[in-house]
Amino acid sequence: MIKANINNQIFEIAFSDNHLQEGTINNKPFCIDSSKVNNNTWHIIKDNQSYNIEILKTDRENKSIELKVNGKVSVVKISDKYDELLKNLGLENSSSKKVLELKAPMPGLVISISAKDGDTIAKGDTLLVLEAMKMENIIKSPTDGVIKKIHISKATAVEKNQLLISFL
Image (cartoon, rainbow, N blue to C red; front, side, top):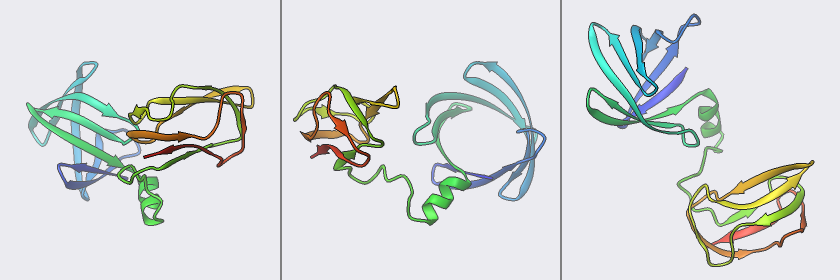
């Protein structure tokens, strides 16, 4: 089961085992007929009503989709049982909280650093490359902000959870 938050209205959706065109929405059965118009557009019939749906933007990291349904734009935020479990444990994605530090996700060797103290960065910007087990891992910014201090340098070996960068 997934939860879809559409314009602050919650829908619990459970799909049938056979395919995604049958299931329940808020415990009420549904069945749709759909046809793909092009890469981002579908035509769907549900309960004898026709819907033209276009995907405008997807944000996989935040599990959201911006859709245009019959000309009206809506943002759909999706959560599944794992998101709900993390939320119940108090470990949900804290993207709304200010991130002040970036720590090493694993031990490795700093191959390159793309930012410097005082740089203004956006969430998702590449900050550094960390080599671990002969693989290069691109470390991206978890937040928008300004770099207060870079605590490591190129060719530095780091341990897991070692402080790499502080943000203002």
